[in-house]
Image 1 (cartoon, rainbow, N blue to C red):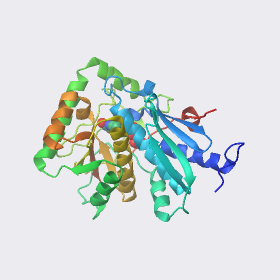
Image 2 (cartoon, helix red, strand yellow):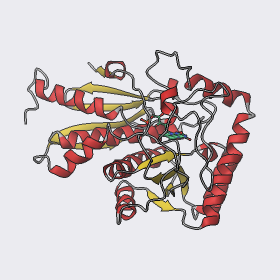
Image 3 (cartoon, rainbow, N blue to C red):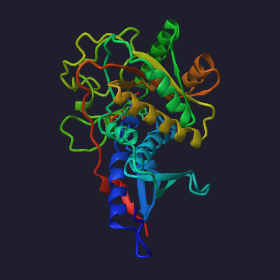
Image 4 (spheres, rainbow, N blue to C red):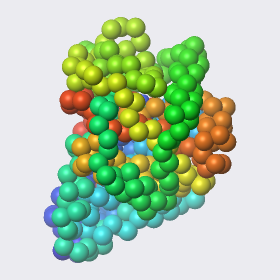
Length: 337
Ligand SMILES: Cc1cc2nc3c(=O)[nH]c(=O)nc-3n(C[C@H](O)[C@H](O)[C@H](O)COP(=O)(O)O)c2cc1C
């Protein structure tokens, strides 16, 4: 392993850093805002929040922005690990710069094992699902493994087993959807991040990412209204017969400070990569967590006082998941002096 000399990092390290950032950006982010920047200085990568990309209406305090950046941080770590480094991470290293979320230092690592290579390979395979699931049971042990993944990153993944809890979470999602749709500022924000099919943008939730006719599942968790009455959406055959809501999960954390949210994002991504490897897909429904009163309700009723960070459904998607886009890495990665 060569970390370069006084003149700078070796070409190999620079190439590896670039590859790792290319993986990092394939993290999920709310409305595909990709609210991150990576500053590179030698063998140190700084992850910052790009607050111009925060959702001022749905996410005014940047909670979902931090979860998104946490997911990107996990990808970065996973990729570096598989490239043979041991990434040392300092979360929120400078109290005077709250948008500097993490410094990641490349330390010499062990020879990468097969497990870390396999995990890294899932980064670009994972896609958000926006439909129903087959009724197939989950592979044995997968939920337990995902729970351990989440705990390993400092969060908890809790299954909503009770049929009434699942039903209540679906109904709260529907209530939030109604509240948001009748709020003009929220509708304008969705419109900004769900561009028309003719777009040349490399961010936002685009037509290819959601089905034109999302299937009804029981209980029904409404999708966000990205098409806004235009009839947009992919003609997908993939959900034929996929009427199950899947396994409903809440990702929760003991606190709700920026560090807890960053940890929740890392926990989410670690668990999602494992799910992807097992042939599972996840659908996110975070509308209720964006309405402050509903988030408090979910917390008090269903999270035992822990803070709900994500609501997701997990299962075997019928057919392919749909497509997504990312900005080129040169737009988000800069060399720092
Ligand atoms: C914090 C957070 C909240 C999200 N909420 C939703 C949601 O409510 N509905 C949805 O369809 N997707 C949701 N997503 C998924 C993003 O829209 C998705 O990650 C993004 O469009 C990129 O697509 P990809 O995950 O397929 O790469 C959320 C993602 C994150 C990280």
